[in-house]
Structure formats: C-alpha cells, structure tokens
Image (cartoon, rainbow, N blue to C red; front, side):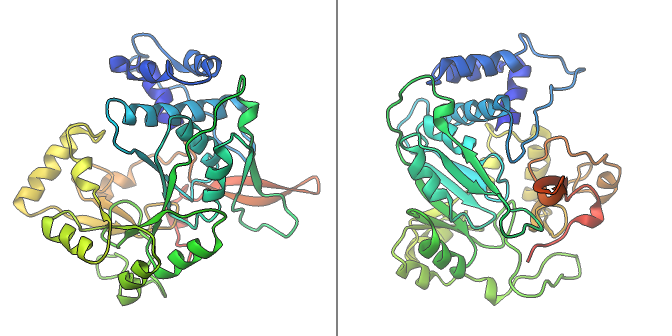
Length: 370
C-alpha cells in the first residue's frame, strides 16, 4: 500500500481522496511528514519517474514504516467512508516484511476483518490482540538457511510512533485463506489467538493458488494438475464450528446456493469486481477481455512459474500483454518494489544476518516451495 499511496501523491492526489483520508489520521505530525515527502502539486508529469520507495529489511527506516502505517490507514478509511458495512483487508503471508506496520495502520482506521493466505499465518491473531492496546508485537521472518539461535524476529512497537496516549483499538476478526483441511486444523490448534473463520479457495480461484498436493504434474499446456487430494472436505470444515466462505467458481446464483447448502456463510467474489468500472484495471484490457468472454474465447492460464513465490498464478491470456510469451520475453526484469524477495542467511563478521534476493530475477529461478 505504501507504494500505491506514494504514487498517488506524486500524481497530485487526483480527486483529493488521499487528502481527505490523511486529514483524519490520528497522528497528524506523522501524516504531515509522509505527505510532504511525496506529494507533488499538479502531479509529477508522465515524462518523469516516480520517486522510489525504500525496500523493507528486517529492520526498516522510520520513514518507510510511517509511510506504510499512513498508507494502510488511508486505504481502509476510504473503503469505510460513507457507509456502515464491514470492510476487510487482505494480506499475503509470504509478504512478511510489511506485516506489522501494515496491520497497525489498518487497525487505526477501524478495519473490521484481516484476511491472510499464501502461507501459514498462525502468528497473526496474536498480533491483532496486542495492537488493540498499542502493545509491541513480533513476527517471525522466514529466512532460508536459518540456524538455531538466529534472531529472525521482526519487531514493531506502536508507542514509538504515537504522539500521546490513544484509546484502545477494535480487534478485527481474522479470516485465514486456506486450501486444505490440514491447514484449517493447524490454524485452529496452533494459532496464538482466535481464528474467526476461513476463506476456502479452490484451484480455480484467481490470483495465487496453493500448489497441488503431492508430486507436481503438468498437463500438455504446462498447467499444474489438481486432483482429489486438493478437494477440501466441507463436512469436516463445517464440524470445526467456525464460519467459512467458498471461493473459486462461485459467481452464479446456483453456486451461491450450493455454497450455502454446504454450510458456508457465503462466497468470495473476485472477477466481477476486477471488471467493474471502479477497479484499477486498464480500461482497454477490461474491454478486450469482456469481448473475449462474450465470444467464448476467454482463456485463463494457471502459470506454475510466473510468480516468484513458487505458487501457481492465474493469468488471463490477452494479446500484447505480458501473458503473451513473445511480449514477456522482451520485458526488462527489474526488482524495484521488492516485496517478494527471499530472506536468506549470510555470515557478516561472524554474526548471522538476513540478506535478501529476488527469486524472480531470472526466469529459470522460479520454483515451487513444496
């Protein structure tokens, strides 16, 4: 969110929405610093690059952390503005470095739900509990090659950013995004706080998908093959006694009814909102993809190597975009955002430290973490 927020400011804050939200941030001095650091009156111009955002580390600069806190607050505040319906925010567990300041910023704005998948987020409920009273929290960073005794905890103390006492925050409900019964059981038994429900995503859900269980097999077109082992037993989920929602191919009235009949609280909808007028997708892409859908020629490819996370990733096939192999081959590969970098153990002066590398830097480096 900090990257999107900073670029909106550099575009001159079209519509003044960022300003409206920032004026409601509960720590005005922090908001002013972040605003002054990125806002360009009238916009920077199309011929000028965006000011880069610093990349996260195990310990990040105060400027970056403040930008992250304010950005997540702004996004949630705007989503909640003008109505009383619940609002949630979805994070990927694999993007670990921004977790703590991101969640705190969202909670400052009164977020109702925190959703998280793409990993095993057993430590998130405890973070939510601590942030209610602005208490310091930690989160374990996955470090490739880590050894016993290494300090891989990230730390965040809200009181280091507060300008005075603040009232307790609302504890948002936590929904874990899962693709197996085993993960549901693990989260309920081992989480350090309350898990309030599950989003169960099948292999047809958009975005990242959990890899197939067992040995990876690809079909003739190069897509991962899913089988019976990847089907979640909804009766067992229902017996766990927590609400759950179903995702992936539940966009019709019949499928919604089927989900409700299975005991689900509801369904998750993605595609319809990705193609609505208010979404950030390029208008030309929406128009061309909708036309393909009407013609019956739309195609979504589950790519096993395009994401540096190692998870299969859904990509709508559209000419003259990066889904076209010829176009993709000419793309200059650069890690200028860095959220999906991998932390790894290095030895510096005899002290174990975490370095980082982009696992997507070369096409051949993409791999599954099974």
